[in-house]
Image (tube, rainbow, N blue to C red; front, top):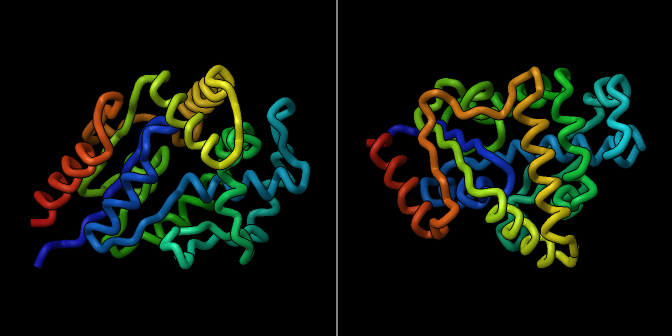
Length: 229
């Protein structure tokens, strides 16, 4: 009987981490957890309460004190989408907007926020059989994960992908605006003091600048099957 793995997928913004993680979890029969969505939920909650802005940063005390009020859950909808909920309200689409993208790094750098969400993430994956993607999964959340992947791609490719994704949702931004957002988020994530965005020393690097989704999925599934055996 194959063993159940813990699979950690980290990497830069708009490299397709969530898409790959969802497909891999489905193929393996594992649980999928989108850790980035959890930080976006806290950012959305802060936005709604006017505790954070792209220009002014955030009111740390109010956000930190509100964490017990922020209940995050994932539920499959009728279309099979792993939708994110905030206090019972579906917010899957709202947390993916540029408004949230522009402030999430301010919230994600707060140590109490990270500690709170990391504890939730570790509880979700305690028994293995989980695929989780984010920024610090292989380094902080699951440092002992059997399979660690660090995804990257060129800045231009990532910006083009993100612009197309936003346009499909009716949000129209220029390549320059999207690129600036991606680069600023990556810079903030890599430079924060607590659990910065870095590749784990034993992570397998996956640069998908010129790789199709099918090619990268087949490769990662092969890696997982080898470790399950």
